[in-house]
Image 1: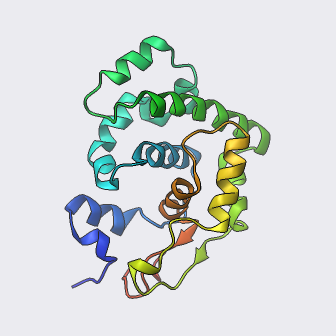
Image 2: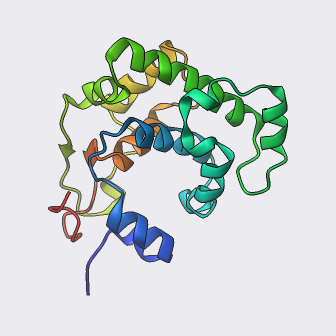
Amino acid sequence: MKIRCSWANTDPLYVKYHDVEWGVPLHDDRQLFEFLLLDGFQAGLSWITILKKRSNFRQAFDHFDPEKIAVYDLRKVKELLANKGIVRNKLKIEAAIQNARSFLAVQKEFGSFDNYIWQFTGGKTIKHAWKTLAEIPAKTNESTAMSNDLKKIGFKFVGPTICYAFMQAAGMVNDHLINCFRYNEV
């Protein structure tokens, strides 16, 4: 039997997400944008809630195409607020639109969002050696620096804790527990 991080043993969606995606270094701008938006929507909720609604989010948000999201209007916001398949929070929806605009500005300035975002870890994965979930911090100096910079350039719902969750998901940090089978794989 495979040993995995204990948070991933509670639901088949968690198991699949943990075993396939979480912590794998990610350099695709569209996927980075998806993770950033989903982590923003997760604020105050459990990640399993977001995973269960993920396919609905993809449909509702044009497969996380930042160029399409950046031009959403009031009609589209109302449509999203009526969509029971996603998290219907007006501030988070408006933040997603603003974040798409900021994302496009970052791509223009840095050539890609990937070039920009990975600077916060020096372009490589920070590999931790946690033995228990209790050791894993909610935020770090790197996630705080990322949060401050993202906010400065117009992003919303990107506090240090959200940024750290994003860093974990995108493989910018390896927070698999050392006894987890994925620890050395990613």
